[in-house]
Image (cartoon, rainbow, N blue to C red):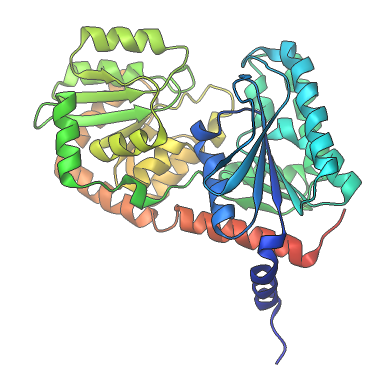
Length: 404
């Protein structure tokens, strides 16, 4: 009996997966602090694919290659600081040349380019060696450059339009940015959504662990615990939350991360005992403190860069942990919360709106349906679904043997 195309793809891929190395390109060396990249790479490795991640050794701290969670990590390129604009161009060129040379000398089946800044080198060598190239767009990269440099914005906009139409497949983080790429490529390139989804098991802890952690932090019994773990910057303002919590009372705020607002957050923590600043913490601690919180906060600034496409780790951590998310009714994050009912949406980002949200969420009976909605949403926005989509993507690419 003749197999369907779907059955043939699955059968062929199960037999040959271990022979098809996927090489991912990443323009930084903070793999352990990039949950999306680490998760996707780990899922591909767990599915049986040999995976190599080529990282730009920006910090210069990595003298040798290594292995993490079943995949290989290769560090290449010259040392360079972050947020240095065009001044990092020589080091970027060094990373690009060394990456292309590595890709020219080694064997693999596909190239997975994380963000636009790795796509030029991936596309060049993919074209030369007739390999499929997957463009993994974490964000609207040109919009991220707009406030840094109009020159960079113009250059990256042109680059994205040209190369997005010439890659094999596009992966991105949400439905709104998927629609953007479909318009850009005129529907000629397939675009998949694989969000920064989490595994609910990572956020499940024994009650004794949560109780002891709460006691260690000195959180008063009965306080509403609100958390945010991410970049402390203008794109995600924390001060509406802090001002609102100060007025309401009975609220403890747990914060972690670094950024331009680090000094101000430290000052708040020094002056107010209900603010707990943990500094930069690793992913296992993020999971623990997320599980400890009653509410997760994501203060998206709608006027900032590519805010409309923001599909944050915070939201999907809240969903995986079964916690309500307090955020703004805007863009992708607003769409997901509105459709799933997994949080409280502020009409705009200010301390008055935030105060109203906190007062509403103080009532456990108001939080309960949101927690149930988050648990339901976790059946869709989860790592098992991400793995299914990734494996189906690569099974299709390899089965079709698409060349361009």
